[in-house]
Length: 185
Image (cartoon, rainbow, N blue to C red; front, side):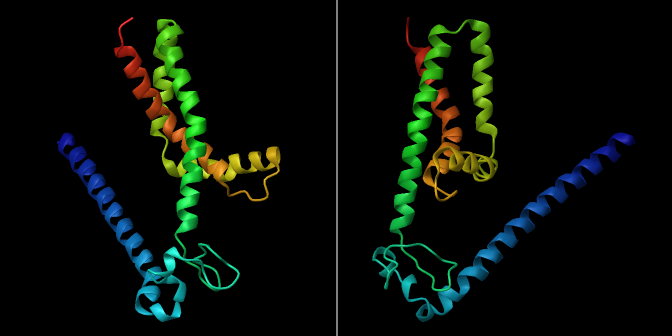
């Protein structure tokens, strides 16, 4: 009797969780739609948001800029592409040497007991959600880097790149370690 009651409670909990996820997704779509609707319904009031203007410099002193929430919204794709490339470059410059060095060390030099400790610890990094990494980069890493290097802005490609490298390290390490282990001595 108690087993079926427990099963019903677990089933109700799962249904409640699934319902909350569906409602959360619906609310996200409603929010994004509400924010984008004026742009879609009144394209004349946002002259910099046309498809042809996305690839050209903006009028006035702004040049190429992406400022969707400013008093005069500016929409240009070039800053997004350049920013993505900068963050990717920083992430690769940090992640590749660390991950490859760790993979070579753990396969070639580390004793068995240490290898069995290193591998799960590095692979645990893959389980950290990107939202947590972004929050860490914004709240902790950005302040530390700003104090260390005297950056003018807290939001920069170095902070984001280092945070992204924490997400890339486990992937590169796992692939490199598997490849090195598959090689014959």
